[in-house]
Length: 463
Ligand code: GLY
Ligand code: MN
Ligand code: MN
Image 1 (cartoon, rainbow, N blue to C red):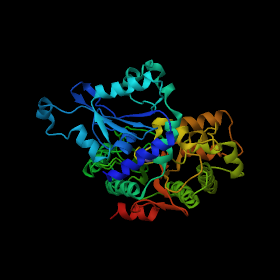
Image 2: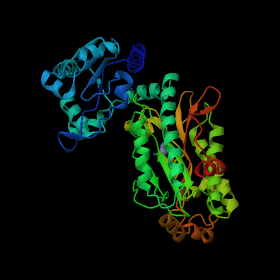
Image 3: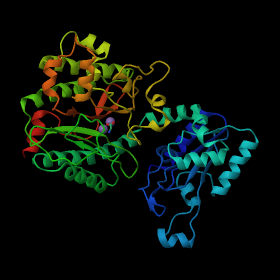
Image 4: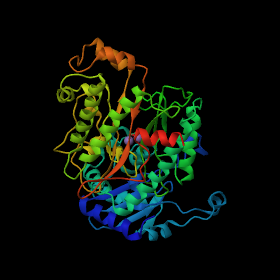
C-alpha cells in the first residue's frame, strides 16, 4: 500500500471537488461461483482501493464532502470467523492505517445514511456493475433496483475520473511492475509458440500461472488464439499450425491492484512468411507512428486516425487497398480491417474506470464519440494530459463474414481491392499493444521493451 498521506490527500481532494453531500464508496463483496461457500477469486472495486485501500470484502467508505470527515465501515470478526480466517485487524485499526478518522459497523453505516437522507442531503455514488451492490444501494438509499444507476452522481464520477486519470510516479511504478510480469508472460509465449503442435491452452495456462507467480491475477481473461480475427476470442483449444499467426493479448495485476495490458503477435513456428511480414510491418508502423504523436493536448482520436491512415498506406503498398487513403479513412473504410479503437485508459482497471461508462472517461464536452463503424469503438477520444496511461493497440484483421458483407454491399469499392483480399480470408489477425505514459513533453513507453520487430521476435523465438 502507499503512505497514509496518499489516501488522505486523495479523499480530501475528492471532498473538495464534490463540495456538497455525502460520498458513498462501496467495496465489493464475495460472490458465489457455484454454491455460496465456493466463491470467485475476490476482486476489490478499484475506486474503493484508490481511496480506502483494503483488498477485503464487504467494506464501505464514506466521505462528507462538506466537512471532510471520513468513515470506514465493516464488521469486526468474531472467534467463529477467526477459526477460518486467522487473526484479522479490526476496522478501527484499518481506518488508522489509511488516516480515516471514523469507523463503524454496517449498522452504523445504515444509521449515518438514514440521518443524511432524513436531512435531505445528497448521497453521491458511482454506477453499480455487480448485482450485489445494486441490491445494496437499493436497500441503503431506498431506490428501486432498476433505477439505481440512473441516480449515480455525475459530479462524483467527474471528480473521480479527474483524479484517477492522472497517475502519480508511485502509481506508474506499480504499472511498470505489472508490465515486468507481462514481459515474462509474453516472452515465454514466444518461446513456446516456436514449437508447432503446441496447444493454445498450454501457452495460455503457462501465462496465467506466470501472472499468479508475479503476485496477482491476470488483468482480464487471456486472449490467446491463432484466430486473431475473433477480437475477444477466449477459446484456447487449437493446435499451433504452420502458417498461422498467434495473437497473445494478456496482462496482469500487481498485489497493489495496478494492471498491464500487452499484445504481441508471432508466427507459429518462429519464422514470418512474406505475407505475414507484410501485414505485420503495416501494423507495427501504425503502432510506432501513433506512439510518436502522443503528447499533452493531442486528442487521442487524432492519434487513432493517424494509426489507421498508416495502416491503410501499408495495405495499399501490399495491394489490398487503393486510391486516396486519407479519403478512405474519412469515409470509414479502415473499419473493415480495424473495427476497434486504438486504445483506452489503463490503471487500476485494465480499461480504467470503464464501470463509470466509457464516455465519462474517454470523451468530454469538446470530443464526443463518432457514430462511424470502427471509429465509434474508440474508447478514448479526448485530449491527452500528462500522467495519463493509455494503450496503443492497432490491429489488422481479416474477418471473412465482414469482408463478404462489405463486398456484397459494394462498400468502399474505391479503396478496397476485394479480389486481392479473397486470398487473405484464411490469414487471421494481428494486434500489437503497448502501454504508454503521457509525459509533460511527450510520451514514455512503459516497461522493459518486449520484442516487437520481426527481427527481435524471430531472434527470441529461435534462441
Ligand atoms: N484486452 C482487451 C484490450 O486490449 O483492450
Ligand atoms: Mn489488450
Ligand atoms: Mn487494451
